[in-house]
Image (cartoon, rainbow, N blue to C red; front, side, top):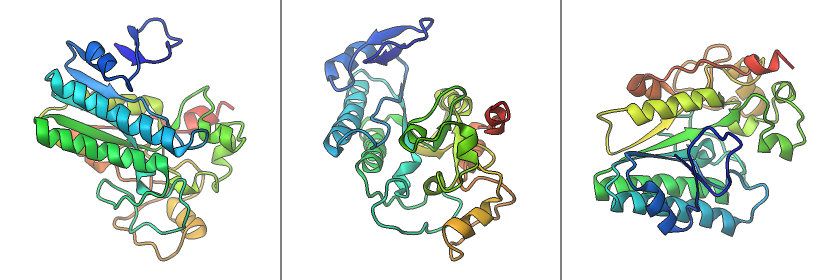
Length: 265
């Protein structure tokens, strides 16, 4: 069942119009559910003030976990973001402790959106401890969706994914990491089906390459610094996010590349 404040264009899915900021709506919709996949959020800081972002993302997530715990639902998966690392939307420049980024890299947010999602991960961990739930936080990078212009592209007036690929400066703050929405869907399916995980897990998911035609180490040296530590070898255009944990524990195998979209543009 799809639970949202706006009805989806796809009429083939079961839909309930409700608001996650109203906890009674959460309680009503969640009755009988075995697993909750929580995607709702203000997804970036471009158009909304900090107080709206913090309220929607933190209180909404709190309501989801409170309602789930009250109803005895033991599995909740929620969408986090690579913005938790703090490089997106930062006010002051700083370097990563190491690359590729992974689940253990420190989170040094400087904006309301990244902070709200960092807190959401703590909310998930808290309910895992206090209510013996299995909770998963999924750190999602820049999303590629065929036929859809993403908010970042609108914000910077970028007309196509081809233009994204040809402008490496644009996704510098995300270290050129991305994921096709179909691979994200695969990851969520695997998490729904997963057994035997710890009470709270964080997973990074991404594509198998960066979103440029340039080798990843070369990008780092040119756009970031030659002083950044590489914890593992990054060959060619391999991603600067390590999703090895998702591969090992879930069987995650990204299948799609930006080339699937751009070569048709």
